[in-house]
Length: 313
Image (cartoon, rainbow, N blue to C red):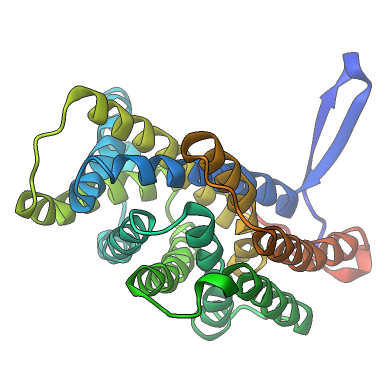
């Protein structure tokens, strides 16, 4: 099958390039991971001023409110779906991710938490093969395992004793992988906008009881911080939704490594946190592990005999 490609041109600069459906999915994945990397550092700051459960509630409420103007303009048809139960299940999984992840960020350095979250590709690859029936080649298995070794290198100094924070970060990775696989299946019938809308709606409702149990009325400055987190988080989720609609989940989740340099830089600027040498060595290993299978896939797409199936962008 012929692969559909988009051409991007900048005639004044004399630059042009072509992206396949998988290439566009990679771009969306990188945009989403960059947004979420910045959000993670912002969450670290906000959770020092507001209970974690309350931060989770306001973050999801912001996401829901951002869609209301569009809903008023385009009508209910914009978010119509025949899979409301799937959206509810995705929201339950997403809420678990946020509760575990936000709690971990409030208790440990951002770069270390980000490194632990890189275990998600391993869980996602297994889940994609078992539950989605995706064919996962040996190269991806090796690359994912290599990336996991990189994570161990990064966290080795901090994993001499597995504390509550590390356990929370690892638990969030399990649910993060489950959420990614759910989104992959849901994008076959619903747009990323519909998925993110119901995430904001259901996760706001589900997190409200937890927030009320520890409620502390925030000041306007903290509310503003949470609103910015909601905007960037929503943008990141929309970008990830577009990414998973254009390529196999197991081929994209490895690109999550982008969050490491983004989080490390932002954490340094905001909190003067400086990752040690193990973070950068492990991060480089994860980078190489994630990029290898993608380059081999690109070469296969260039060959008509490869029979590569085009994916929707």
